[in-house]
Image (tube, rainbow, N blue to C red; front, side, top):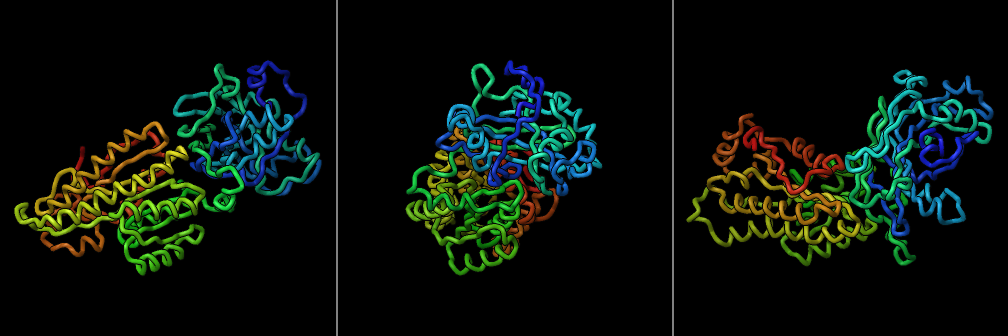
Length: 483
């Protein structure tokens, strides 16, 4: 702490004569893009960008400054999240609790080794922090009071440093608590910590993930499980409807590979769910895959199922991807469409999407964070002849998505749609060949899309990287739609 000259000037305090050291617990450490919770007991949540030093091998006690470089494994970015009320106003003035709550040390996005960035370069590089795109900290490591080598030499007098230990070297001026008025972090904020030559570490701020009170302890257990996964969705709780096969299965697999802690796939057939979960677990053993049999067209069944899923994830539904859908009868003129078939398509494709959003939104709103992706279709934008019910239902999904996106835009929740052209799935295989040819002939690339291509687009849409986009309909059409 207090290791930048300009940060000391900001506080009007003398420059320390020796490094000021405090610690963080292991459960503070999370990866890039992992949501950082603002606990119920925290009122003054603050940001701090810091240069992180990763120890490469054991540092013996009383190591000299000259020998320090050979023990450095590399450099990274650390976001030293701080609860100022607990750091400075409570607990007898001890800093520990205000610095060491779960998730209070995001690290990443990479480790730059010493052959890529020398100690001299590390001591002469730009460092800054942005909140929602606004630059709030902007300085240089040439303002460090104590350099990396001096800090490690000093710490080695008191404790043995091990390979993998990370030392954060202090923050420059501009933190929230010293602004007038103070600038505290709230759910929905996105913090970007950047160091030139290393990269940018992104941390979305969300509402409480652990609920207070002994009666909620059982539901908080999942939050204490060490998260060894990394990726854009590290630690997330996800739901994918239509996840037992096709596009939904591909999306569920990709979410698990990107670090999601739990992915629940929802479908009608219990046996298909069991088989899908079994194969998904083989692909990604670190992710918990569960299957829930549910008719998405039944609002009461959806509300009950979503409630069960949330209760198993500490009250959280972070990501909802709705891929369940049916085509209905095709190759028919409008006058030949059976009203019962029309209603059946709308029950799944529209009512199902509505039911899923309606059941998930209260949990997302409570936690101040959520990502919804509704799978529409290019047919919903342009219409496909011979597919009245399907085209109309997918157009309704786009309208529903735009409305939800606007309604919840200030609550840390995004809702977007994806409109693919024809994708090679079993549903497409079951269509009449002339119907498939009609659709692919309209695609400039003259081919179907792949499940992997759709899953990759969805991954971006549910990641924190898409934080400034909501109520939008993305395309994956091989050039068919360019507006």
